[in-house]
Length: 268
Image 1 (cartoon, rainbow, N blue to C red):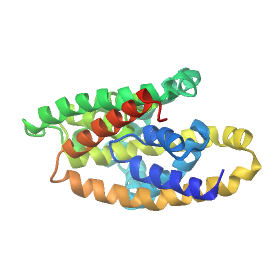
Image 2 (cartoon, rainbow, N blue to C red):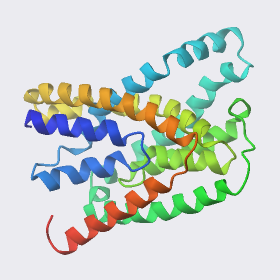
Image 3 (cartoon, helix red, strand yellow):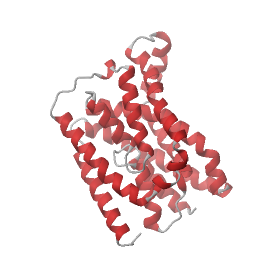
Image 4 (cartoon, helix red, strand yellow):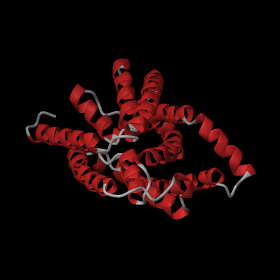
């Protein structure tokens, strides 16, 4: 893989992992646009480790306090949060293992990606309008095990390119009554075990499929995704404190529509 393309993929991964526009969709589309071979889900999972490091770095103080509280005050809101994050991760682990064949096969169709980009945008629009019409009722500190499992189930939808991990989890969090900024915070924290598991699980396959020569490309892609991922987290949390999701919904519809037209016209 050309190093410039690895850097580009890292840039796309970092910017789109946390914005609700689907990193998997953009990483699937980019090779077709630039005439490069699709590096596959294994490459994507490994460079996601850069965005994992970005989440850990951004929430370092939170993670340290959660770890301390888990042992010193396990019944406190911070002490319970690691358990909630673990519970919320279970659904995507089960779904990822069960659907591995489809994730690496027919679900990577660009037609599927285009349709899901548009279709899930409509779901996001309905939920965003619903949330805008009511006051938040679920403080971050009052999250329950059921809440975590519901958000975790929503996260499994992100296995389909075009859905968006952050889009699905933020929307579910809005449905249960969280504020947009709290929903984003829980979504990002929930991504830590999921991204770590996928990256570690796929590392061997990435090296096997892409070869030892892929190590520089993986290193560059991961580094770029860390830098851009950190910036994306900081920006999105600030944005959602005073804005809704409509700008991302419009973008998704335009991107999905453009991709579908390009496919029908045989431009890709």
